[in-house]
Image (cartoon, rainbow, N blue to C red):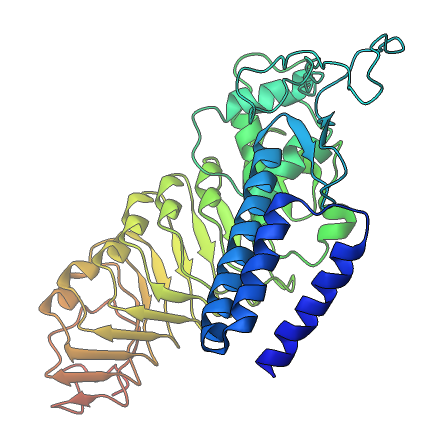
Length: 412
């Protein structure tokens, strides 16, 4: 088969040599080499080696030409026909000046292209200068918005929804009749809005948010002087969520009632900032966690009703500062602190919890204590002497070591 291929090549070579066209010198050399090998059968393998080297040489030349064309600013057009003269055309990346008809006698001579304006052939042409885009204008703040931002300049993280409502949706501004610092009014309005958002007040979308009215005119809110909120009454309001920490900003609050809702979460420690608070009514909700010791900071607190929740942990001794405490039907545990029994507390209801240990001796010196309900706990030991003023005491369903007390007026 190899001999047949070479013989076909020789025949084609003879036909070509008969034509008047003269082959280039390098083609003659290739044909002579092929003819020589064909006459020498032992050199057939050498022929294929020489042919392969010739192909590699041609390919190398073409590749080099293509590389030169890619790197040069002037694109070199190569022709595979050896009789066609090589020409060069200007790269499309270089702008060409308009030229007049050639005056050269040689029609094949191309006009000389102007030198490249770039020192580095691979450097991209410099793009023309563009004008800067218009500066984005910051929306102009209204005097009201500026006042709000100033009022909260030193404030920490805010409730996003409540603050956005206050800044962008709300329309109320302090009356011109109000003199002095208006920051407390902005803080109060924000705190009430946060309370509404955090507890999902059922009538939130109706009359609750009156964007042009003072919060003192909103449903469930009372103000003592028409300016400062002193009462939040939202019992039976189908509320959920939890009490926000911002409730501590209502420093004039006297009365908080969220009885019979579905409020969860813990009682914020910021409740201790409400030094004037008298009554906290949290009964019949789903509140959890420990009762904060900051409750002891509320010096004027009279009654804490937090029964029927899920409060846990021990009973804070600070509750002895109150007149009355009802924490029945929770998940309280631990022993009762002796400091709980002061000469101020008059009502202590702790039935249906998990309180353990013995009843402190201090229970006998609580001179104002008239009601003490401790049934359905895990109390043990003996019952200490009780004050004669105690008119209602229930100690049943515990593990006391005696079944009656000395005076026999307590239900054991």
